[in-house]
Image (cartoon, rainbow over all chains, first blue to last red; front, side, top):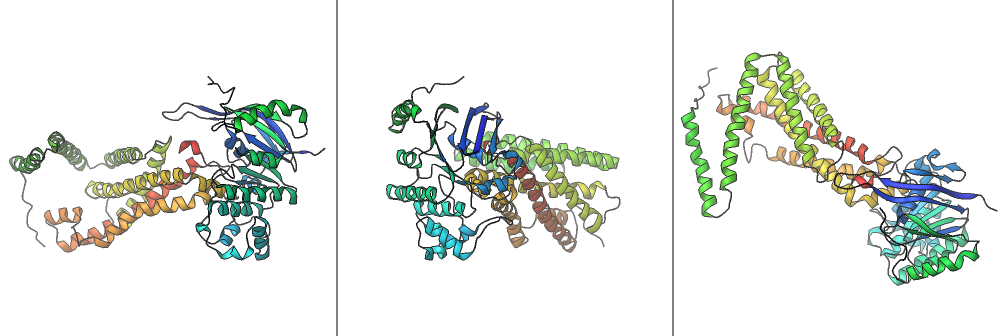
Length: 255
Length: 263
């Protein structure tokens, strides 16, 4: 059995009260673990804390309580900049900067290790379904789906061990959704990559396989381990209902 | 060199100046602007506030003690801090200290250079020089810090995803917000740069006008005005730079995170 790449224990995130706003609990006592090379999908209604949980894994968000262990060490033991190269994030709305596709792929702070040579950039592009000749194309005029795939290539150039996907397809039209999904499936096969994805897309949930974590109001409502098909029934009913757009049972206003 | 004496202004002459206010009030009534009340209150405030500061300055000038001068400077910084912070569209805890630090340091540096090195005032606390010069410096620092702070906050809010994208790519916190810092500093400095381009062509600066009215030769007045323009440029740059640098430290954590909940 694989050692877990991520071990999350009793994680809570609360924002301090601001002027005119009460303190807010975003995540409440979340625990799970993820084996290396496996996938985990976070599902749940909007505002249930999925994106925040994802951002705790690359330490863009600091938990108020609990621990996150990455590759055997507390993530606070890593330099956050190094951690974020090993645990790469692809956001819901891809952010590309001014310049060419190549400029965007090369974008990195000084001292980031890895191969950013021309041949490597070209192969990264073809990995996400682009003709490598498009390296010199203006990145700001790409379609949403193309931008998302360039963003995925940019994350992959850091040779991450984990890819965090924050609703990678929700801002895209159906043809682009298919292209991005195919890209993600191919990556899973080609590398020993662990993936944590937030998604509402039943198709992505199915393709990724792996474990499922169902989050409501910042709490884990259900967790289904990849190798535990026995638990499938219960979570499947709830998940299918949620993904099909039925009202979520068990969402109550918390005090 | 003899200069013509300044014409004294008596209280009955000030009363005549109220005729000018009456003109605006008449316009307001005639055009239904509904500003009569504010105009009246504004006129009264102008008289009361200026008389108040006049008496304070007269007392400080007469006492001629350095600690009174320092006290006035501290009070001026406190008011400027309050004004700069109140212009942030979303309150930021600790912004008062940030503004106070930025304004104090930028004013002290600029004022120190002008008083000690350029004009060479002896003694350094001579109220006739230090108070008006400090006021002009502080006014510019305050405006630029407020402009820069508001722009920084708005940009960080609107472009938070961009900041997080850079952080996620392994950039440090300061590197990730550098484009917003640059935009904020440019916003703060452009009005000053523009003013330098047209100074003396469109309007005579207030200080120079005052000096000429008080009997100085125009050639001496413009020499002072040149120093004033340059020191205002320095105060603008230093004030906004310090404010933005310190504010960024509030919005970022040492672990290179953006505190989105503050935006």
